[in-house]
Amino acid sequence: VKWRMDNAQIYLPIIDSGVEYKWIYLGWIPVAVKGAGLLSFGDITLNTETGIFAASAMTADRCSALITRMKFVCSFGEAVGDGIPVEDISLVGTQMGKSKPDKALLARNVEQLKEDFDMKASMEIDKVSRRFRRCNYCGKSEEDAEDDDFKLLQCACKKYYYCSKEHQKLNWKDHKAKCIKIREGK
Image (tube, rainbow, N blue to C red; front, side, top):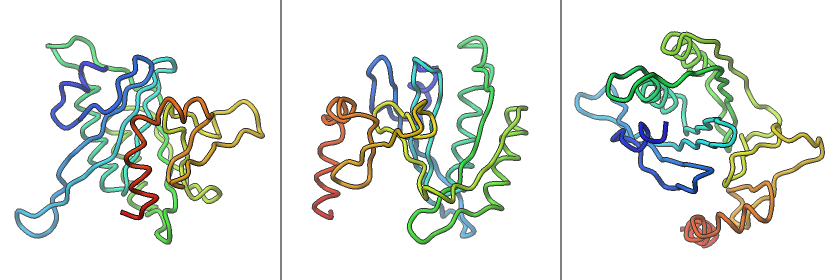
């Protein structure tokens, strides 16, 4: 999996800890004007202990672009052997600020997942948290926790979360510059 992600031109590795790998992805989404398009981006995290991919995209269209790219990474290829099995996928639409998730576009992405990966896919709208919060280091969410009272800790920049002080400290080297810029309003 890591080899495929590292060798796909649209993924840029940003974390390589041996336990967690994280890539940002870049793509191009064409728009109605001939030759025009939008740069598409998001991030993908692979936790090697759980084998779970967690991906985020800013919009449903960017999610669609990510699904197309992941089909390539997970498909069968003679050069690298067998494909990567995909067992279960769930799309979560969240409200960011005042913009609400587009249910029709999320439903289209669920159908694309079913067709591309020939597996079950589900969709839900997160009305409670308004954000799909995960630890910025390990990807653990409040929903993953065994303890019902578990809450993620919010960083001083108010944009990122951590499951523990230890993970915040371990991620500080990668997050520091971004955190300072966010707090300074740049």
